[in-house]
Image (tube, rainbow, N blue to C red; front, side, top):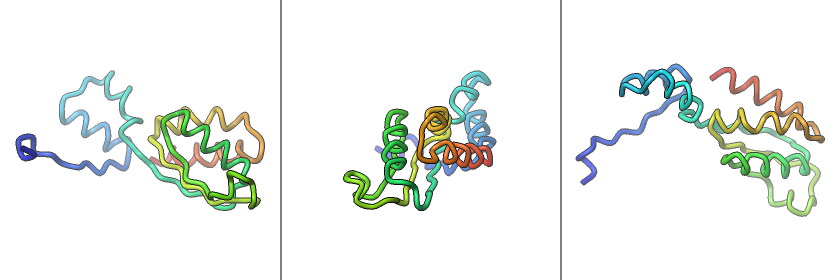
Length: 121
């Protein structure tokens, strides 16, 4: 029965909120440090990304366990650009960013933007 465990959806928006939630259930400090970035899921939208870059962005995040929604036109490169929606945990962003920094088509710039955005969490 669902009420046996008093389920609750936590809306965690910052690292501090994630830490506090884990402290509240008596996680160890070491455990909190390992898990805090995995507790925050962030969705970031970028506009007018080169379609080749969008494909690499998607592949990179998929390899880290995240997801990127891109236009269907990226598959055949029939349009030059696509808006993208990146869906990932902070942990996944941190794993993807170093890979993006080594890629062409302004992905280094996108990596810097993502770095700045996740620092604000």
